[in-house]
Length: 77
Image 1: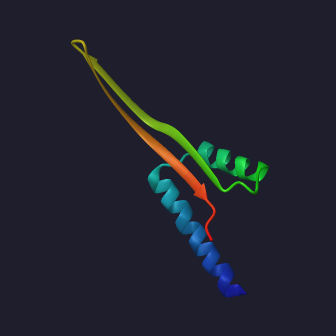
Image 2 (image 1 turned 180 degrees about the vertical axis):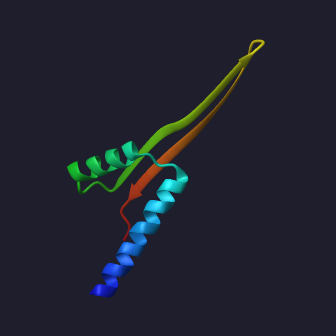
Image 3 (image 1 turned 60 degrees about the horizontal axis):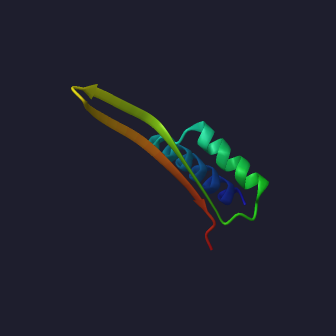
């Protein structure tokens, strides 16, 4: 039993680090957690958020760059 707990904790730590590296925000995680708590039989959840945006305008031109994070949670068999 101790072996499973240790492996679970290692996987959760790895998962948290990967989410942080990708740029998933706390609000996205909270939305996913709340949605899945309200509807536990939901097969999939998807959320999207713009985390950074850059706009530059000059001489009638506009350059825009947006960093979008998409979070998907799906049940697997």
